[in-house]
Image (cartoon, rainbow, N blue to C red; front, side, top):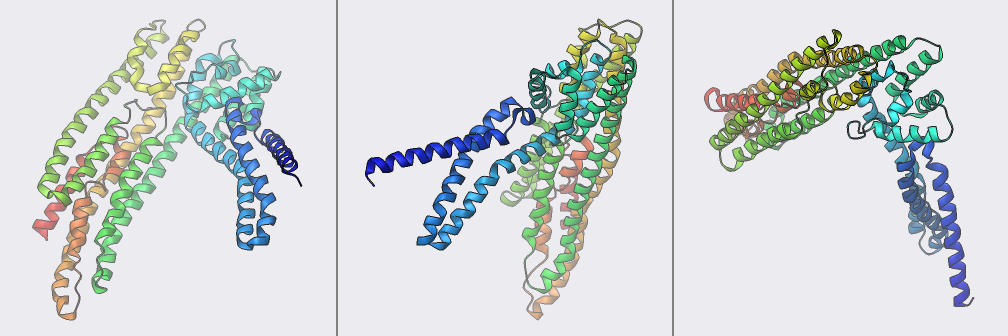
Length: 478
């Protein structure tokens, strides 16, 4: 075959592959299921996945004649590339479900002022502030696309509920649609929405507290297990000291994860500066313990504790003041006294949620701001009470985490005395090195308990207490 013919054949094959890949990507990535924006992005990526998969599957038999192993790897690569689009969509929908589940109480609270008005909830969701609802905006774009296909507002909401990956959002939307279609008065629709918002706020905090308790107890158990392993390492002449770094790393990582997973409603928006500063301070203390000595470690931790506590105190005061303002305007609205300007003073009490609610309450002011504001306040207060209920459990677990390093060090020091008698038997390891590592890691271990106790207003007081008690256990009791 002439070179020109080979080139023409290659061009035709490439064109066929491109057309087939485009068709496959369009069938898989559908805007009514994913939304128009994400669909455009995914189709571009999936097209290249499919082209590479088709090319690899075509070349794999030819390569197998020369190298069977390489041909098999090429065929497996084609299968992986073929499956990647489905894996990408499944991963995205799981992430979206997680985000929507977290936002559902806040979304339902935002919808409350509109429920008693003539505006369809579908239009409200489409027009929801994108900056305040990070995950809902993707479903809002998809709902807007469904409406453009010719669906009426109620059937569009039903279609959105049928295809959304979030179980909580699905149940809330179906509850609203069914109540509306049965011809219930708007007051009944509002009441159903309020009940759902209250239940979601309580349930979200309850689930979060149980998850946090499990993670904290795991870190504490892992730390205490080092005491059990110490005699084994002693008898086997193995140094287990580096194992103390495992809970020391898991604790701050788990703390930041817990803070990022806290429900979006019921807590003031203090940003991430305080928890990041607290975790960095605990790490700095541990590093200073190894590099500059325990005195420098205590000094660094004490200074940063004062800074973090001062920042947290300011955040506490702002949230308490805002909560009082919100309570006053909720009571005042019941008697017809409502000023749009004053509600901005309550913004720190509800984070981004209340910023979105300001526009909703402005709309409700034409129809009945009293009922809307009282309903919103009920949900926010319910979420706040659920969050405050975690403080007692968090304080107890933080206390356990604080005592775990010094108790472990005391027990390990007792084993160190046995090590002196074991030298004659040829045992060269010394469990006391594990005690040193635990003392250095002690500022990090209680951080995860403080994450449940104080949330975004993280405290370094438990870390400083743990370090001081660990040093006392090492130098005085040891």
